[in-house]
Length: 373
Image (tube, rainbow, N blue to C red):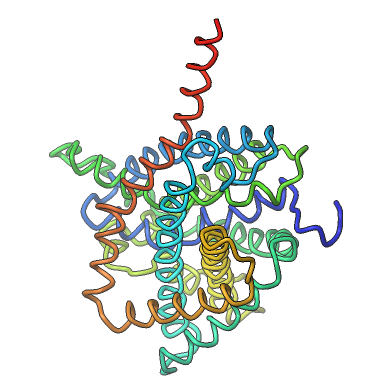
């Protein structure tokens, strides 16, 4: 691989996406799905992941087309939709990624105050994290790709070890009944499946990385492997949590996965604070998720304005995401409002835009071929 050319390999892209796929889903989905659905939330988890996989294939097809034409995402959009519509779409993408990044930063602050350093002012934690995010994004995509590739196994192996140690505490009886006597409500099943699917709408800003990929990269295989790995880990985690604590207890936990890290003990007692180590691993995962969202926002800002003021935009994105995260932490009503907006408006509109961007060029080219015939 070439050095200092702002290019990443397909493997590095897959590693990068793994954190996006795993960070928030592993922390939030077990509690959300069991709260109203109990063990039946397992079926919503599977359905949501299947929907996310189809969406991933659609986005990858679009990226392959862009790579064949050697086009960046904004050039690709302008070719089919014109400058005004392209800028409007990028502006919406900027806001979408920014709100997602701010929520991730809020979650980071919450994890830090609960499990790592208590009684620390929110503004101080968010400020330090924002500085680190600004530094990380300003380093460039190539540097971040290498870092995420190096961290991957350091992240994955302890998680696998945690699962292997936790499996001995599972009581299979807690999984029963998998379906309640009343059966599965179709409306609830669809709503929870939609919620799981909503966690993967950050795939909509995956095409911004197209210009940073080597043309010979097999991105489809790398991304599908990362997605499958994330899905497998989340299914295992859901079964572990419900098998150890029971679905009603998991429903009352805010971050059940972090509670699991404190419960599992390493044989021999040679690692007294393995919970802090494993919590730190999840912390890094969410941090990288926020970093990826910030990068997408900065990229959109540069293409909308036509100015390559990378440093200024990174600094501005860090400030905006930090302020919004503090407001989310201080005001529960604001956090709930943004979550409702994200699910009711943000996700459907972004999904519609992604489908149009993918299908419209294909329909247009088919029309041109028929006209030639």
